[in-house]
Image 1 (spheres, rainbow, N blue to C red):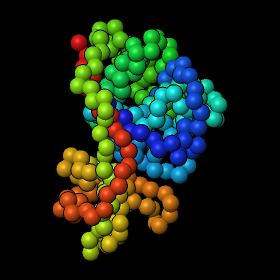
Image 2: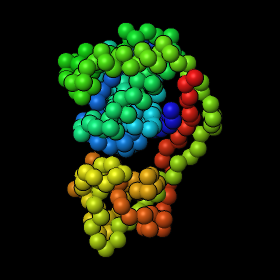
Image 3: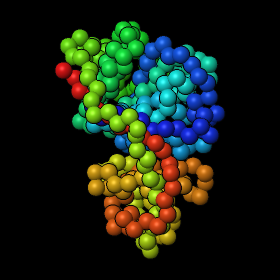
Length: 261
């Protein structure tokens, strides 16, 4: 299990994670989107509004976007509600279309939750849904497939396997965000690196932020219709990304692997 930690800038604490709180459990969500975990977290941190969560999990990686000692705005029960203030909020990716990617994301999320339960000394009763916090039907696809089924999957990891952390990089590494200017033609932006779901496009000569190349696709963040809202997605081109001309510090990432024996 690969875990990547993305640091939220302190300047955004007021709209993303305003309070220091002690956690007493976990709240599970489905993203209702088909983007990767890194895309979901990057988009969440880039939005200028009170929408946030602690973790996103896709079919191969866990991305932690907010410190667990801080609150968030995910569970719909207000700034001081139990879900937002006192639980770790986790989003399972690829829930819009479902299929194999979502199934694998669910499995990885169950494995990760088992790891957290062991880490904090909690039992399975500490795991709840968004619906339990504020009545919204979420995690919708997980609920459709059966909540007890998902809890049983977590129990499998809890009862049969022991987590071991290895390959820890304690000092982390600085990730460079580069500014790219599109060429003379429109560039389509997709929600996933397979480039199957179009979510927008870059206009000719439009500038955007580039986070790097993932699965042989460029991951970019761009403004929507000139507003202060952003979208995160993937583009097919690679040549232009290698020639970007301006860079700046964006986030600090700490990556480590967890194996189960």
